Image 1 (cartoon, rainbow, N blue to C red):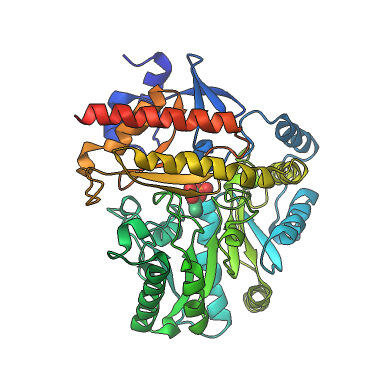
Image 2: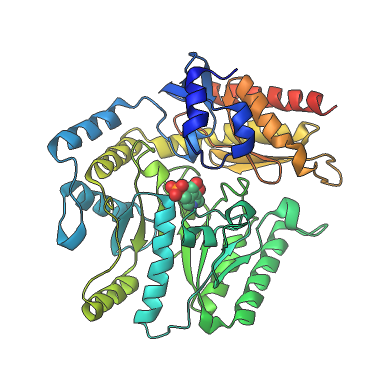
Length: 453
Ligand code: PLP
């Protein structure tokens, strides 16, 4: 029997990324409050939030300073926009701060309210740039299989996951997907990570040549793939890819929506992986998810092109009501102040070896084919046969079962396509809580194994 609140939910809400048919039987997990890395359901049951919500609540669930920053801005000026040259101090200061923090040269910052909008903006700016540069045929954009960049029509086209394309009439024409850089699944027998990276770079070059370099405008990649399975690229991957992009004048966009703001123990994932993109997309941990805010960085060349277009067309015809929302910007400024003052990013780097040791120890488990991560993110893959890497029938829902057992054990983790389970806790997680997380995940795996038999 579903509780009253659960029944009302089932009859009223559409839940993103939920099997809407199965959901009518299972009902929701209704959460009521949070503290530290813990969230509590309506019966008061605690769960360790091993996913930081959706890879985003970096400072945990009870940061009063963020609440106060929002309250203060709300009472002073709850809203003004950035259209037609209107402005406000939180957005100005935040753009300045992001220019300082970015690991690449940044001329300007454009704000959105989500990661999807940020990547949608990247697509539009890429097209706009090439129109301004007088090369209207250079418009194709390459994402990667299993890459995740959001759900708007353009960002879902960048995404490389079946659920975002099947029966959505996507991807749009002009969106291509290179191979997913997953050594465990993609490498040939005996192929080293470096050799695999070199092969993927060659394959990317072949794709660009096949399409015609004069038609290929940009390449987008997450430093560590998130929703596609929490997949760490093989050694030397970006070092092999970047010269190919440079050779054909293909713009490189780093989707830092998950990795930005400390996830890999550096301010941006690009630093951890030695990437040198032209632009960054960011969102999520920018505000520790206390307010919706995202954006993109704009380099000087792009900015000049945008100015030229404005001169020609009469305006820069892009932006949403909430672009650079003052309350969200104020919360972002406070979040960054806390990251700096409390050395949150350095703390994540310090805790990472312990986190990764506990994660990789799960590879000993009979069900786990791979358990790998970087910083405070990781993924494991459940397989039916470790020697052959054979997977269970997807219909069996083994990873989903494991995640359900974890929830019964008081741990929230996320199952992803390909029987993968992701872990991505708030950056403020304590070492003893890291142990609790992996103890509970181990128990969930044991229970999954017993369930399979
Ligand atoms: N890019 C990446 C790497 C993401 O992980 C996500 C969301 O999980 C997005 C983009 C889309 O962000 P949003 O859900 O805020 O639209």
